[in-house]
Length: 170
Image (cartoon, rainbow, N blue to C red; front, side):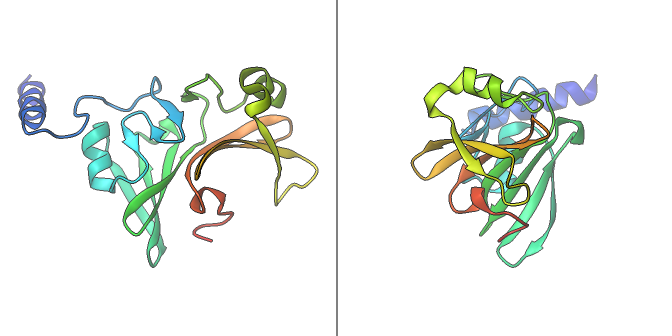
């Protein structure tokens, strides 16, 4: 009980201090968009994202100004790419979290087309050219759907050029 009360008091104090989105815990109900994932926004630092989501983020090694972070609990299947210390791309690899329009990992391309219609742009996949991936574009940002064996395997949302990186930070 002491932990809950202490957490509640900390959250209330943070709200009074003007912290962004405290209490908007990132969960499977959070939605992916070109601006991020629920309270986790493209452009935040990892520390800001931890405060906004109420979740711990483990930084992973990168190369220079580019690195990765893993959101906990890992079962949510959320990772992020940071450049120059700010989140540039959010990756979702598990079915639980959907886009704002309802698309999820394990959906079919036909399902994506039913949801997005002409907004959905087919794109060549570098490692599997016969199979197409798909994108929703919004200025210098996009949501990408990786597809393998006729199913969405990942959803990436973020800004260009980082959202288009193929491996690590390149």
